[in-house]
Length: 366
Figure (cartoon, rainbow, N blue to C red):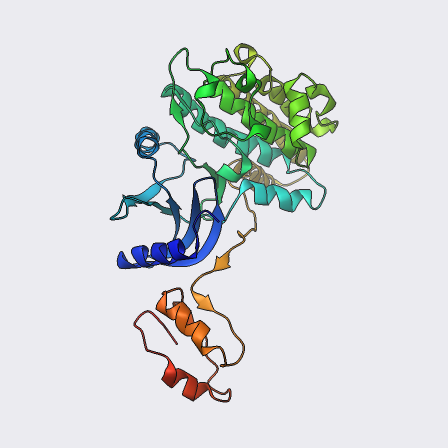
């Protein structure tokens, strides 16, 4: 973990002063951790990182440019602690990320349905259009950075901490963070330049994995960057049309690669084609009311996705124990304010004496 036990205690206490109560540890990245917390009677996500002030300023600038863009993670609040040693970002709590959804499908040895792949790709290309309009690059498009919103039933691109503004002539070595598996070929070119087409390549690899129904290995992506994409394209005839789009997204030379506006156009054309095929298939087999209902549901399937998933979490606010013999350990947790809730069995032997020994705290609920 990025933070040791003492730092975690400090994080817990700092947030509690602002009436933000950590409940679970969710995940960690290169420079910080993500927690679940309760804030203003809502469940939120709290990202805590060691501040790099230039990076914070750049991220805030980029999120401001993207604030009205759909399918972009929206921040609720950001602040530094008093010592300016930690940076906190509070946002909506999402159900899980795309990688976890992919894993659930791949465990069953199946790809995602084509209409959902197309719909997801349209959502991401919509974000890319805005990124391209503002001369930005995300730089780390990968399944872990695409969050699923179970309430809105859509995906949101997150983690703009390493996003950049670019001008003609920006070099790929200016990128500070990337995931090599999803990185475009120009990353290794010392004379290479980057723009939105770098992000489009990363999305292309994700779409390729979605159609294959499996995660690619790093070595596979290395071969693809060297021109061996035909060996990895899905042979399933159902994916023939989207494969043609994926090929354009994974062009080795960025000048030959599709941009975000053309990508959105081609994806929407494919959506309309699939809708027409579906309408033709059902209109003569069902009565008018049933067929209209089916068509409406099919159209919605490109916009709304129903997935059941939950992030792996480590509870921080609940102490689980057997018996009442480990009093000192529990008292230590309470002293460090790592416990917000204790489940006590009043029928167990010695429970009453145990409770009397605990120093009552406003932060502990029995």
